[in-house]
Length: 237
Image: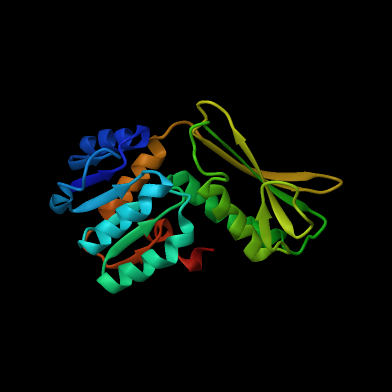
């Protein structure tokens, strides 16, 4: 498989190493200083860039018929536009707020626990996310995905990163050097606290998941998620 890497920072370099170990070829390593030359030779593109570049990268791929897997967060106000473009171009697109296999299982656990706890309104729910200081978006896309799943099943109608009201789910955002990503959910009452937590030890889990998604999307048309890649169907919830 020939891969275009759109974004060649720390994450892009880890993806490159694992892709080569799996027998794939890198035909484009795009940073902010070079063009899309070489994209036409790719079977699939993997985008781990920055919010300002992601929209252009996804648009370029969908417009030229290259399947695109994007793990860049912080641009999701424009996600519906990319879905429309994908459908218009009969393209192939996967977006994931987190490609780690473990995190996607954690998403399922979070959803299940939120549904189970929805009838117990004595518990106040909060989300905590910790990332390295170079992370640009705040809160993380993963934290937003976790929060939205909780909101779907509970009395909360929005999330907030500061001074939440009774109707807002609090996301506690922390930035600490060299932390790849830690997310936890707490259900706290006057008598006890229930917590679930996912801790990433390095970037390799995110990189491997994105490559697995790229391998999976070949030959498929449409807009997908990691739930499709991992076959986590609605029946399993």
